[in-house]
Length: 248
Image (tube, rainbow, N blue to C red; front, side, top):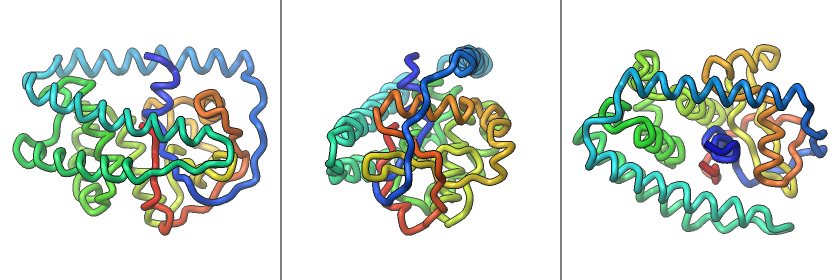
């Protein structure tokens, strides 16, 4: 799995606002070691979940969710590419329309078959379902699903890394500090992170959720978008939650 793909799976970025930014320093050898160690650890964790739950028992639903996940990723890739064009903000009209459509389809699946666990549809398709929920504009449904998803994650029936992203998204949307540092914001020419609870222990929480160390992650952001990452943080602001254009 490529680093950029992993990065995009574990971030949520909005496209409005301003922040003072500085270009990141070159990746150090220690950060390269940390990145390699994290890649090994997350690969091991994913394999553990697959071994525990199996490849999935509903092949038809698995195929449907993978197609939905592809649609989610395709539109976000287009938005990311547009965001790289200097001086231009991407048109997210089609992105929002795609999210609404995929949310509706996922709701129908959940009503019929329950939440798509790894046991039901396999790791990749279960992960796709979490991506779609995270990108949904239906915040009430996200909040409704959160308690049951936390139980599933605790029982190793779904991947908890995407749950961390969903928790952070809801905290920021509520005007609260995020816990895992997954929520970022596009500013004119820069990317900045929303403020986090207890920054000194951020990396420990990220490790528990199989997310890379935050400084490594900032380097990954820069490599993916070629946009400087700010050393400043942005206070959470619920009024910006609806402008989410999070790539993957």
